Length: 88
Image (tube, rainbow, N blue to C red; front, side):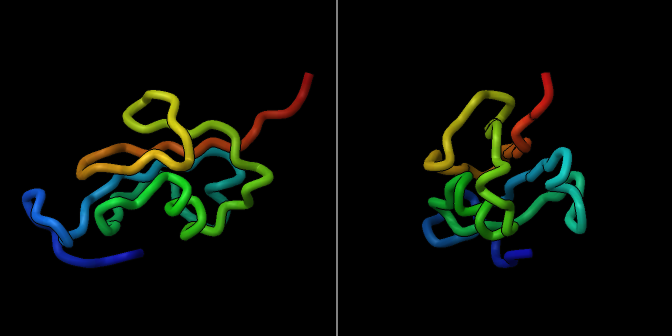
């Protein structure tokens, strides 16, 4: 986990993000965890830091709303990462 200080919006202080993983992304990781990241961290940077295989990354949600990998996270955000679904 990335660790650091948390501050009331002060530049350079880390922000707390609740990260939720589903499906195969939970294997050898976690289901839900609050983690510290530097300000300006994107959803894609979190996925990279967790070493999630990009070919399996399907849906990205921030606060329950569809988002992109380039979207920046703010203190208190909930990031949900779901793998692609297959089947028919």
